[in-house]
Picture 1 (cartoon, rainbow, N blue to C red):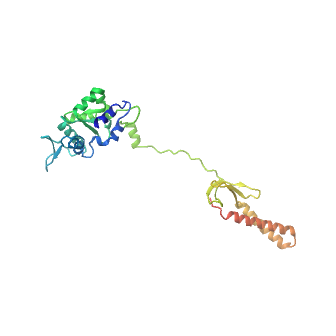
Picture 2 (tube, helix red, strand yellow):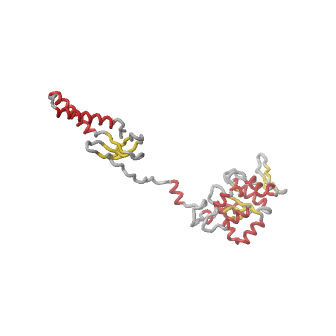
Picture 3 (cartoon, helix red, strand yellow):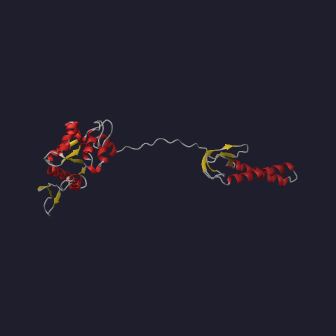
Length: 289
């Protein structure tokens, strides 16, 4: 299975990162971030895969040792964050005769590096098929010395590698990083202001509350069309005309009291009363804006 994953990575065009292949097959790699490198290698190349497991020997006050097929090697831990990477490098030197562990270049610059363990014969097969340069472009062979490994893995051409067709993890852009850490003020797109004559009303037919511009009728009643049900309805007079109607009614009552037998004033009184009744009925469900 691992050689198929390596093949998928190697056929990826050089203009694209292979990180998606690595991330999609996460369990096929050794990762140097959680202190599980021995367990991961044992699952991929140890007894679970028909080989021999690596075991750990730890004594109080001493550095741990890795044991494999009668061999033993001390792990030069520094008791810092990079200890997992040191463990992977030590493991690679211990099992290299049976398992060649190489670092996936496209995880450089990530918080954790991925390593692919393959039998030496499988790497030879891949180098024959794709060329040694193509294999080295995606996979870094681990040098015997730890400092040499750190130097090779931290090379600028790996850390700062850019891919024209995407922005993979591992590509570091100082300008983009500075912009991300110190973002400027956010400028929101200007929002269109609402017209000043919008009125919030409630449809008496369906109860929908919405805002609309009133259409004034002959008696200055405000007409609306519901945005939900599409039915038309009217609302009461404006405040100024309500006051005018009250004044008209008061004047009409006063004149009627003085000239009670004048039919024209009786008609005016009736009209004023109807206007007021309609005004209150049409205004009682008005929703204030």
